[in-house]
Image 1 (cartoon, rainbow, N blue to C red):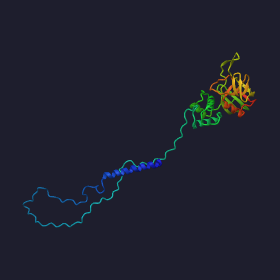
Image 2: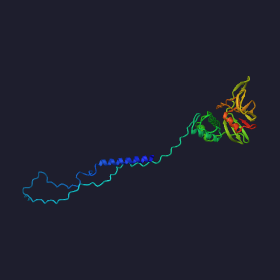
Image 3: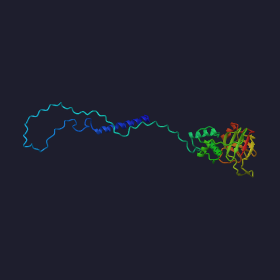
Image 4: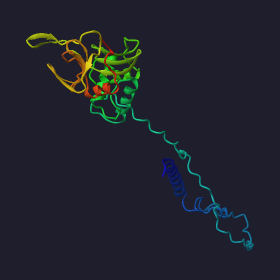
Length: 305
């Protein structure tokens, strides 16, 4: 039964109860008037205790005329009375159909480990802008975290990989980093913002988060070195399609572009802040995407700023 039908049924029950209450107050049918209503009025009686005057002759006792026999009066029959319910609240009108419930608002904060439609919507919005995270799947995993880090870097926000209100505003505003190149294919690395841009003729095609040189001192082969990703304009010189073990660690599918063994490469850990010896780290999945889409062919430009 619909809510409207139930409301109407409740109103009808209320009206019926009101009518029954009114009938009970009047008593059984035919007893609603004064007692003896419809009988002839009684004869006027002489005042009690008054004797007839002595000077007045006593009237002759003439038999009173027998009153005409009136037809027996039928017992009063109460005319049917339509009992109206007492004035009071009118029968409630049927409520209008309820409005469709509003869609639940997206959570104010989304973070790694979350899942569901809100996460999928976030992923779709990031992907539409160019922040790469693979295929949207509704799971807030590492690739989604990396894309949010990139968004935060582009918006100049603290990078934590959690989509809070300010990051949400940046996403809604369509925030994208601006490239510095205007022609040809180029890979641009913004060290301060932790961004890697793949640019074609001045248009940003893909955006990744990257972790570059920590700018800390370390010792290698007995000499002090600076963990720095050098600024400048370079070109991709050579690459290795697979894992390569270097003097400072393992690199996944590296694309070398600067002297000293500086490369863009995949790595299992890509933190929010600079942490490498000088290379530009991305996730293993992102490095696979770079190779699959040939975003850094040998000879292409790499700009580090």
